[in-house]
Length: 149
Image (cartoon, rainbow, N blue to C red):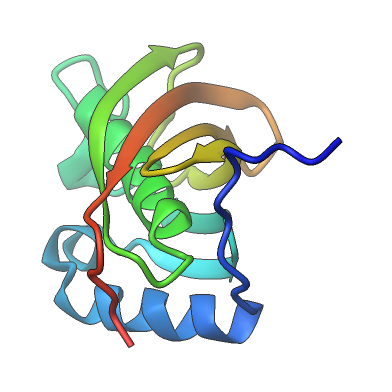
């Protein structure tokens, strides 16, 4: 039986990429951290970032706020990939392992549910050894009738 609450618009990977590139042009926070868009499709996104010295906290590991920013950016690209403006309504982050200087971090966001204006997404952040560094759950709310292209 089809879920009548599901409102996923018919969007192609190409449209998702165009939207992501438009957002990235103005996303100065992500660009300042060297965050790169690796892959995007409707409801999914993969970003990468290398941990630099200015990202370390007083304990010599990557600051949790930097890891959260990477995860939040992947979440933002995934929930806006349908060409409809979506904003975060909440996030919850769990840190599982430290990230170190020069680690390449990979954030993979994927949609769990999209109903009416509300979305639910999981984001996992791994290091290049595929060890899980952090996991984040984000909730989004769409702004009606607001598109990028």
